[in-house]
Image (cartoon, rainbow, N blue to C red; front, top):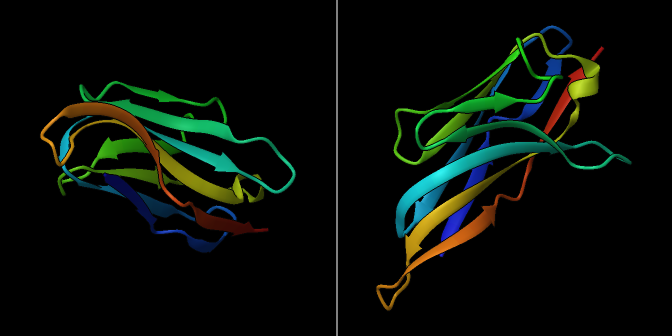
Length: 124
């Protein structure tokens, strides 16, 4: 089984910065891609950024120029550096990953996993 745990959220003033981390653990063979999503109250979940195992990056228009996604020095950890935060960035941020892992029977399986989410609040 694979677990994803987000950290680094909190309360920040408009114009400030936060760095979120998503740490994956378990019998991981490879993370193919990892996405950051967010969901604000009363709104649909939206994609924020994606990174692949080859470090290809894509961003939502709302994130371009302000957010950076990258592989952390820690193994199987991805960060999301968020700068110039705005009140409209307030949401629960979740990470999700496509992961090859090994079962207890030593089978290689691909799965989509989600973290529980972390709150980011930007005050005006």
